[in-house]
Image (cartoon, rainbow, N blue to C red; front, side, top):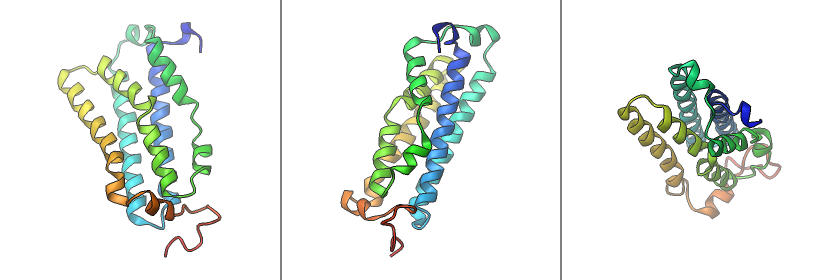
Length: 175
């Protein structure tokens, strides 16, 4: 997009699209690990968090004036959002062979631009300080879940042994 199109409204569109893509990714991971209910449940929780993030952004955007939405977006944040909009969920899911791959992908995604764009938008446009604090805490809890993943699902060697459905080596993955 050109700078003339890099409006606050377009930034919200990109950020909401990124949150929906993350939701789709986590639902895909839940499906790829449906043979391990605890793992699938974890990815479903993450997908639900992404739904909440998108709804939060939609709510904030709906409360902005036409002038605010038409204003130029922060160029650095807009570039980050543009990068996340190019993320291919289908390609990412094709690369998942085991739980370790899924964990690494989720770690990268949760520590990448998507969350910094969300944090920037909620920090800049959330209407009340209490809302900002709540949203920061919610995002912090979301990121903390992936940090606790190894405690919940074992070390790297264990995660390598949990094969994703659809992987040609996943035969016997339920054992």
